Image (cartoon, rainbow, N blue to C red; front, side, top):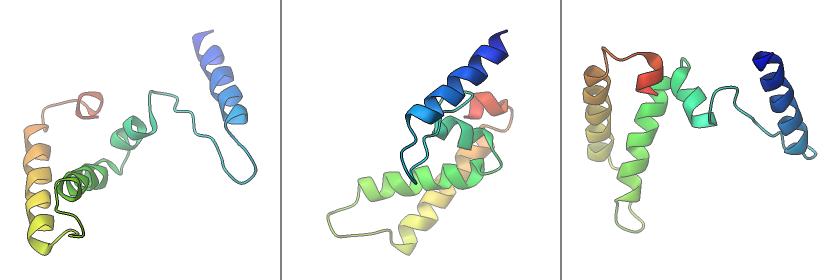
Length: 92
């Protein structure tokens, strides 16, 4: 019964948030980010988060430098190693 209710909620929300060529996304789990973190894109997504942190903390008009990309990659790899024993849900 719960699965049926969840499916109905997701379909209804998808209809409500879809307008023209813009499609609404309603996650069956939690959020879009959570679903991506649970998917096969989790490693790439983790790196993107670290790149975003570097961009957020950069000076105005300075993009990611090679050094910042390398640092973000090292940070993401260290974090991935620290999360090795966690379940997918815990990593997300």
